[in-house]
Amino acid sequence: MRHDHIISAKQLSRADIDTVLDHAADIAADPGAFADRHSDTLLGLLFFEPSTRTKMSFTTAMKRLGGDIVDMGSVESSSVKKGESLADTVRVVEGYTDALVLRHPMEGSAKMASEFVDVPLVNAGDGAGQHPTQTLLDLYTIRENAGFDDLTIGIMGDLKYGRTVHSLAHALTTVDARQHFISPESLQLPRSVRYDLHEAGAGVREHTELDEILPELDVLYVTRIQAERFPDESEYREVAGQYQIDAETLDAAKDDLTVMHPLPRVDEIAHDVDETTHAQYFQQAHNGVPVRMALLDLMLGGDQ
Ligand code: NCD
Image: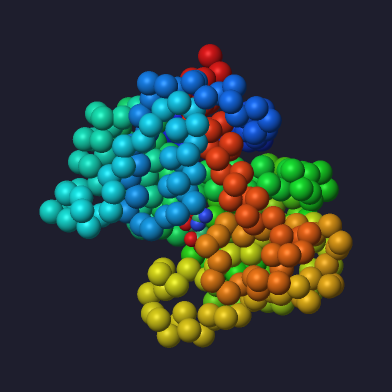
């Protein structure tokens, strides 16, 4: 995987996924053994959209590998404010760093930016497009809790604008998971994602009600309605507050159902779920560190 850009989950084969997840498990078992692995490495962070977990876990991952980060900081304080193009920004920052992590509101931006740089570039979310490293930590969490064999997963919430959904759904085709999509009709999967899933041989089963399918699920992946991506606020208000779960909802679920969420949550998962054995979303966020350490290590040639 050396020097490959990571733009979309579509580029990850089952073998790539296993390689990253196995390496992440080795790192999680003994993180100290990797502490000096990349002591001369600088990772450039270019976040044009808000982030807590993705940015902080990439920072933590790079530092735990012995390296450091160089952060563009907020758009407000950067030359983007002066009208600099994304292509120019990435061309400059690649000269300072050994790899780049980019989050940007425009779908397709990571692919475009990667064409201007020679260092590896990781897409940390391009608008409603893709978020492949979230998918890797999601898969790690699924593998740890439910396993990949005979897996039935429900993905609920904003399937239209949720980039974590678009990435995850594609990656799940490599493990032949049965996927159920639960959302209001207005937030169903976009046609392009549906087409890709179809091409990958996955059947798309859609529901408007969670209770139709909840008892069959091994994993329920809940997502936030992506308010910032709605062109029209009244459209958002119509669906806001729908598709919430609480501890009582989960009475109908399997005892070993795993509930996941990429976070941040707004009101999709009531706090009483946190205390149940189903809740794995905080552990899921913690898994971002070993998984991103593994990915960075492999991208930067640590397996050589
Ligand atoms: C997600 C994102 O940015 O797409 N957050 C994350 O990276 N964990 C999900 C979201 O914002 O709803």
